[in-house]
Amino acid sequence: MTASKIHPSAVIHPSAIVEPGAVIGAGSTVGPFSLIGPNVVLGERVEVKSHVVLTGWSEIGDETVIFPFATIGEIPQDLKFKGEKSHLKVGKRCRIREGVTLNLGTDGGGGWTRVGDDCLLMTGVHVGHDSQVGDRVILGNDVALAGHVVLEDDVIVSGLSGVHQYVRVGRGAIIGGITMVTHDVIPYGLVHASRGELEGLNLVGLKRRGVDRPAIHALRAAYEELSKGEGTFLDRARRLAETSDVDQVKEIAQFILGQSDRNFLTPK
Image (cartoon, rainbow, N blue to C red; front, side):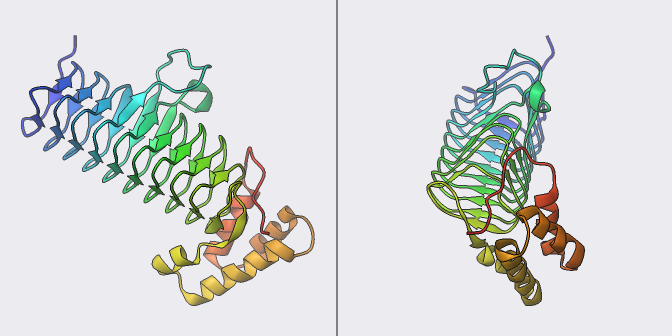
């Protein structure tokens, strides 16, 4: 039996259970009645509050805070899962609120579920197996990501929304509340409907990130081209990729032309 590696500066509440083999980094704390499984690695200054379950082959980045009743690293909700070794990695400085569930990956999906740095996962969020969540992502209350979802950096998904399996959501996009997203969303897109429709660009998010006015004008023109230009949606994206010298426009075009297992939400 491998002993736990608990840094001398870590603080473990007497009622918590840290199973042999777990690694607890410097300055980390584990609160009352929490369970840390034998294959869990906590970085430095991680705060695990009360009644948290951390299990599986799970790695939690420095300065992340996990709130009560979160369950992190349990097996996937996938009937094809047969107990194979798979992983979960959560980045640095994340805030994982009450009742969040993050599942391990599966062999069929690459074996890893990942959440990036500086993310906020609000109460009741579910991140399914093999999903890849970028940096600075915000998931509102009770958002559900199915398996194999990709959220690029700076995405916001508002409360009570769901994202279908294998869907990709491009960088800087925003999903409105109570929306079901069943197709890929372009970078910087704005989606809101009971079945999500692409209604424009996330202009507020672009301005907050300091994107300059000429680039925003170019993005608006590119969106208009995607909406009303000649040829198919992919033809329009190819033209943008070939003709634009604006980084954000090229990013949208390359996203559309990339490998996808889903159709696209296209401009109304």
